[in-house]
Amino acid sequence: MTGSSPVDWLRMRKRLITPTREKIRTRGEGWLDIERAAVVEFTSEDPDYPIESTFVSGEARGWRAAAAGIQTIRLIFDHPQKLSCVSLVFEESEAARTQEFVLRWSADQEGTLKEIVRQQWNFSPPETIREVEEYRIELSSVTVLELVINPDIGGGGGRASLKNCRLS
Image (cartoon, rainbow, N blue to C red; front, side, top):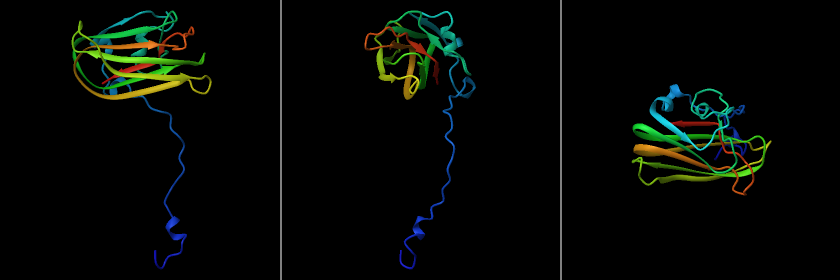
């Protein structure tokens, strides 16, 4: 730094930007069409929040269980799938709770399910109401993908919900 003043090295080019809202890719951007690729099984569903709204593009209401307690959503694929990404969005705007979910898969419909991820999240409305998870995976020959949600590990009366689920 010979020949320059101490302030010269502080002339970094920079600019302030506005934060952008997270972008969730739509079906047309490489996501698997679950409606055509799999049968969806689930333990319960609130009629106002049907399971199919979890797999559509755009701003849908998502799925919510009809009752409190642990819930399961299982995708049984018509043909084995190669999966490289799982994107999950959970929302809770009513009650503070700690949720845990487990995502598992199998290459055989009757086979043992292998755990991909187990995750806990604290919802604290109105500040923390959204959990967005995107997992990069390399799985071949997936015939079953299962999501088990414990909506309140503290034993409260929370109902499981899933705003959005995308696979590629």
